[in-house]
Image 1: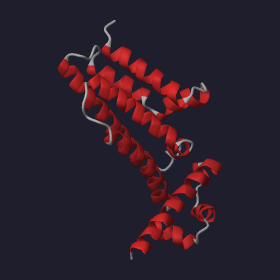
Image 2: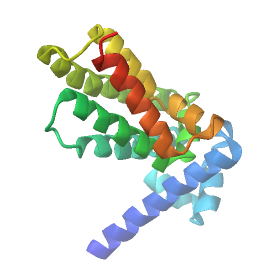
Image 3: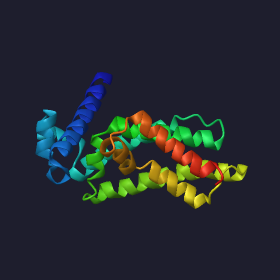
Length: 194
């Protein structure tokens, strides 16, 4: 029984990998169940057994990406100052984005699928909440040098996929350099008085 469950899980992952590959190759508008079945080298019926619709498949692909990012953040140490915690958050979030590229770019572009758009909004709200929690602690300690809303906004933009892609793809910064730049920018603006 355990072997069958593992095979089912492996097939599901292969289908999700195939969906991302189809998205990368053809874009979100051309994501079809037959294309995914062909890419995954499984029967079309197998794809439908795991994912009853294109929308469910796209959401599952996005959830896998978001889940990896959320796990990276959840695994962070909660000790240290809010300043240290925020630096760890920025690093973990960006490393997760780097690990999930280029699939992240195409999954994020599937906003033409309302269910994916809704999940993107939910994950963004989660990210804002995580940032706000850290910065509220910094404010309580008197360490935050900007209004809370501005600190949340700056950190939110610094940890967006668009920012990450701009730095690593368009500006050709290495991931390590991009992370250090983001950490330094956020740290100086939020925790050092002008």
